[in-house]
Image (cartoon, rainbow, N blue to C red):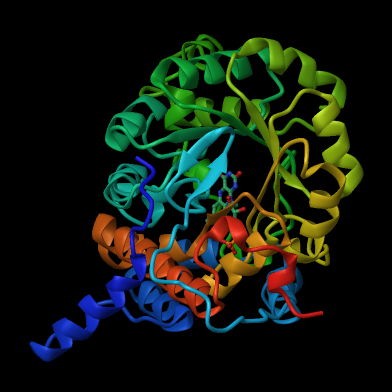
Amino acid sequence: MAQAFTHYGNHQLSIYAQGLKGQLPTLPLRYDDLERRARECLSPEAYWYVAGGAGEDSMRANRSAFDRYRLLPRMLTDISERDLGRTVLGKRQATPLMIAPLGVQEIIHDEAELAVARAAAEVDIPMILSTVSSYPLEDVHQALGATSGWYQLYWPNDDALATSLVQRAEAAGYEAIVVTLDTKMLAWRERDLDGAYLPFLQGKGLANYTSDPVFRAGLDQAPEDDLRATVKHWSNVFAAPARTWNDLARLREATNLPIVLKGVLHPDDAIRARDAGMAGVIVSNHGGRQVDGSIAAIDALAGVVDAVGSRMDVLFDSGIRHGSDVLKAVALGADAVLVGRPFAWGLACAGQAGVAEVLRRLLADTDLSMALCGVARLDDMTRASLAG
Ligand code: FNR
């Protein structure tokens, strides 16, 4: 439930209080240190699957671009009662954070998306579940309990399968469909190619397919009896290079849920999304995993907000690491932001507890940084909160 005046920043005091008892945080606080710790817990190929991109230029740009936006704090305002709440798709949520869809989490932790969903419920942060998850979407929704879930669709080239997946998501209780547009096929990912590693080819991350009646009907034998044929069928349906804007109308008809398009960077694509009846867009370059050399996602945000922000929701991801990043994205006009790699490192280090801790820290940092900028309600964070 959205709750005003929850002082997430108090998490800082609980860490210091533990220190008085001689207890240090079990997970490193700094992002780079956390990633380093996670690396010790993962196989090299799993680590690189998460850490790597399509080359590393856009990943670097996603971070360095944040440096060019500077917060401009104001003094002597009343920040005693604070509210991080945001309204997203017409629903008030307690904070601006959402959990980004990250596929194939079984390579990170055995409990994968179930652990993440339980952590999301603990901290009350909506979760977006990937199509290529390691547990079926129905089981993950159950683990979420009353916390909101959205379902991310990798739009297969088979319309019957797409319809089946979104209708299962709707029946399970997901509240929106996120269609990821930037992954019509996988990019040239050097780290994964170095290890000749693609987890899906080992049958990982395919739970939503192998539990789907339409997908199963396309197989001669049950997936449990013929993994090779299952993977082959998956690779035949996954890539959808022929999809165009015209196909959206059919998907729109397949579900009553609002649809949000992820991976939009150009303002004109955002306008097309709005004209096609979409409820929102997520400005994202997939964490630099698809088009190396592409614009940093944060640099694309203002253009999309200016084009469609008054008429549809605009969310953001790619590079969120600190509270100040969240504030900058919101100031530029994002209604909510998605957290990606940081929670994956928490999952690698400590499962559900690790994910929950990473999210609590990001909320604490956001709350304290907002307050110290002189802003009491995140809804009042605007471009006027930025220098220049
Ligand atoms: C992703 N991302 C992603 N996106 C999506 O729509 N479906 C998916 O299945 C996945 N899978 C996935 C796996 C891994 C390991 C990563 C790191 C990312 C992209 C994700 O939703 C988000 O856009 C990025 O993670 C944002 O970048 P940062 O902030 O994590 O760097």
